[in-house]
Image (cartoon, rainbow, N blue to C red; front, side, top):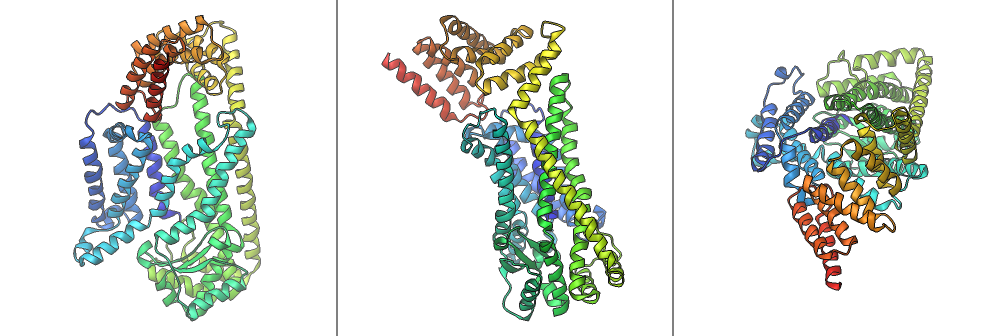
Length: 590
């Protein structure tokens, strides 16, 4: 079930990495948008018509085509400043990066669909048939695309919904971590099955002896499903059966109509018993644990590399981070998830063998192979090959201890997955805890500077990090101390000038000396780096000194720069408009 979505997971990881690459500014992004929405999908159309043998794949080689298109697509995005141009052009949206990622995924969706929908067969069909095939191909990745779109909004929602989001307690770190885990669980349990059913247009099987046999076998296994659905053959490009959903109300058994027609009732019950075995053994829950563990592992790895680069003064190269992220995802799917899947599939085979014996099981999977054009001896990295499964079934029927031995091995895998999940949760909670981050950073810096007395350039990155952390948690004293140390290393650093100015003028009960120094630093920063947030600090400094006309003038400049996308970041334009209006009101009142 996860394989069709793999290129999209790699695409969003790759786009995030490409957006982090330094790119020259693009004055007019028009050509970039034309290339994005016309040239790049054209690559997919070309790949869709290449013979499968050219791709080193068995015909039609859908996954090979998709991965090749993904590689070409990401290469062009990295070589051409397309994402940077889009981010600048979409700055008005409030979050240019999120909008850029969304549009790039939309573009990849179209190109990827063309890569698996060859034009030659389409051109030989009537227009309604062409359109139906193309729409069906578009529907396949739609659930994951909707979830990715929701993921782009999730950080904003979590920051707004979690009260005390700037707190620094370990309890809040655990709350955020467990809240994110609960959100992922809700998606896996409810949203994903419902989205798949709706987006793929799946309908319940019509009442028939076959449908009744499926229902009877599920009941015999003590398994409840929300519905038994017909899985269109053309949707996946092959006939199969599967079960999705973690909870009974939103759990669906899906089966291809062609497979349903090919199997006799005993073979159909064997297939149903196999799928019921997945449910009885809670395999989907452990798949969920494996995926969450991988996500936590990648987050911990990224945090570790960040800290290593921060406090050694040598950040790891971007190509290494990109390689770890994309390579880790491929290794996880191919070897980690593949290993778990093979053992779970064999355990589900065991449930079918116990229920109905080897003959119906063998007849069913041989027909699956014939319908899909799969060679019996062909290996399979996530299911075992057909011949391997038949040999194991016959051996297990002759020697039942083999099934019990395999069950014991699967129990060990499940324990290992749960242990990995708990370890990942614990390490991630500590790594993301503001208390731990601040304490470790301050202790490290104090020990590093204790022998020298004066900060050096090697201390610049950790000092900037600790100063920003102190400012975020509202510790004005620590923030002022760290920013002053940064300015001792780089006296003309406009960002440090701006941040120290903000700390001085916004601290509780600032004196005249702090306000004057803050204004002087803000003016220096504005001269050195005229950006929206810098002029916002200058406006605040004038306002605190009751220089309302100057505050309005600086706020007007900040709004103008923000509208041009110069130094606005993720702050919405509404913020700068409201600031200007507030300064103007105070000026009129004065």
